[in-house]
Length: 637
Image (tube, rainbow, N blue to C red; front, side, top):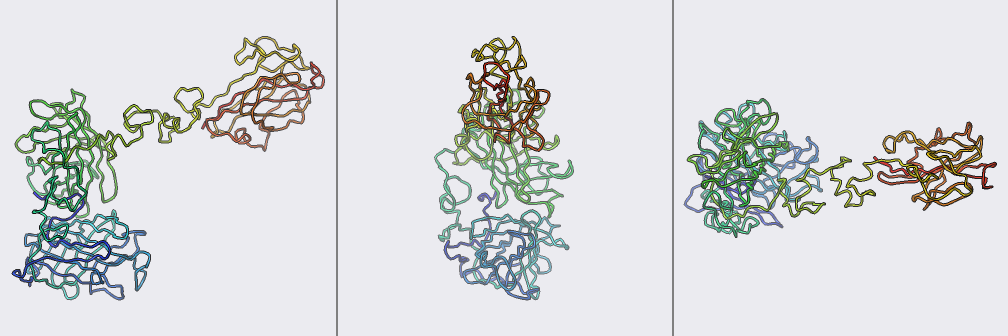
């Protein structure tokens, strides 16, 4: 069983080390191993740049058009530049590894763009190579595949590569061709295609054992406290403070291997998701034991099982994966409410068991949501040490499609991850919890009335107005209310009397009585929603042909003024003037004027107060002016 770090290709020969400041590459070995002579020999070769098709500098051995930027940008990398060194090794058992440091960047014609050029670290593996007529071939028909990474050392960005077959079904070819004796084809960034095309020089010495830190000691001899196959010196260390779990119900973590039962032919796998893409009966499988993969299952001792990591696989076309549909799959899945029964760890439908998570297809970035599925016994997940697959789990996704985990398991020193209810990789105690109830907001069904992606309780905590303190931002509750009516018994009525007893009849909705014998009324049509912008202020009961003006304020008031009550306060705005009121009516906005909310500069959730002040030459109290009732308007979205 191969044990490697997630996304790190360190499983085969020709390990390359590099210094941070000036990248360089070396190959180990001992003098008693001769240099390879034939292409199929076990051994290593130093790689140079391509020959065929090379019409102008810069020279290169690897071309990855569209690596960054536009798809047709020409990115090339030189294997012979100062500070570069790239080796290719064959382990004699079908694995060909290319490792090292190249130099290059964006080819702008005869040179690299000085703003982009730099070092590229290469780790790539071809599997299932065969020797045919003296040529070393990786063929699609023989289950050949390729996978690995390049790291752009200027930024540290890592790009996943997979193999691609040419029209002859070849994924890699080492045949001593006059020109480029070694050629291989790759895919990346979705559907971009690139290629290696290299000259070779045999290197005396044995195929080196993996040595990730370059200290001369093979990885298998180094300390590996979390048992993940990567020396502690080559990765940020976990705590390594948790004991290896022994019993299946113990709190702790296990490294997951591929299933045993039911696996009748290669490729081996630990996760099957038929119909993940394409037809419902397409067989998609993903292996947990290939170089560059690692999948862990952890139990926190409190009912939560987490399965996370990176697998490799794709569309299973019979003993191999389709050359166009293979790559890395990132897995995040959680089972809740696990219980221990007779030494077996189970997630049962009858005990409130649930499962949820995602898989991400790294070739395209497509993310698929997964949920649990119970088997006929009502089990969502079982870890019982059964002969074959000790751990099994069942899933649903897409349009009712189902899949399953079927895994072997090996205890490790890793500690279970901190609680992460939404499975996004961020512990719960680092997530937003606006209502401070101990559960991250992402894991609660919290109202979001304005659909801005932030729960209402968070909007309010961050300053959104909730004047009535009902837990809903006022922006979501546009409202219009009449007030300052000189009738204490009416809704919106006031106890402040009209200035000279010029009251209105009980039940009237208006301001104080004017020269017409009744009060002028301010009402509305339309809504207080800013998006609609259809709010109108309507006046009736005015003295014939008298001028007036609409006014607004940010505060309410109830102050006797002239023959009426002034009911807006704070900073006050004079809005539209009305030269005369034919038929005793007026309205705002007049044709050609901005919407009401624009005239007062309202934002969603803000409350503004409106009234109409008008001249009344023959009115009571000798005031020569009067006012309508007032409106309280809370503007919404």
